[in-house]
Image (tube, rainbow, N blue to C red; front, side, top):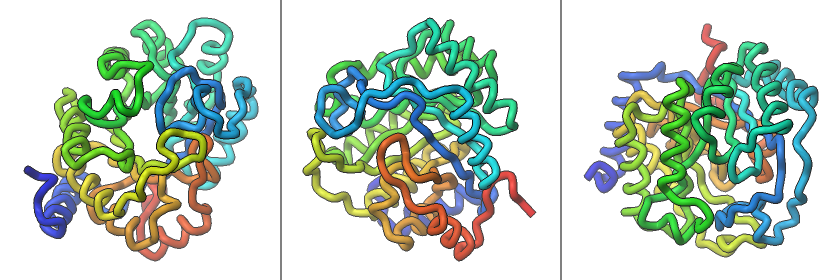
Length: 305
């Protein structure tokens, strides 16, 4: 099994695969903002935005379009290539709020940025409307393996997640789907997640690998800290089985030192999220990221010499 290979061998082979299919110095900078925060009816055990848990996150209204476009313009000026908008919804509902999101998508696309949304479940008609508005990618994570899934979420089935990905693909939008590690799952579950992603045809163009951010009030708040080398192993396996995908080192980077992050890049990660927050959880300071990119001689996508 690929995942079980000696770590240095696994990382070495993943690096070769990465260099075969991607510019070795390229790193895409993404920014994710919450356009609708809190009050989600889902019971995802990791999520501070769930209405099931008392985490101090308030249920807020959908942001104004101008505020979102202002944030996108600021992000673009700081070198961000992909701008992502997330709403704490179980599913997309037709009506004024969805129309507002469509205006956000049109506005961000007009800036020349890759535009991504994560809005929960959606049907084929809604996916088509997002595509018409200029949406480049839709994020809908599988989170974990099918076997471990019901220990994390009970309000949405695994098949419903796969159905949303199918609707996104049918509409011609690129697929962004990955998962979270450090939720108490086993190595077999991490392999199971990557297997589910790798049997999608075609592979997701974007595979975010998140490390659990433990938030007081959620059921996973007291989870054991994950060994950063498990993250490296997971990323190297993702790169090995999905050679063309952009593997994103996503949530949880605040828990990693710069050496661990460097190993993740060596193992095949070629994207990070920048900005103060990922939805509601903290992210490294932009100055820290800039310094590390300069040290490693990595070049943000769209800024190639």
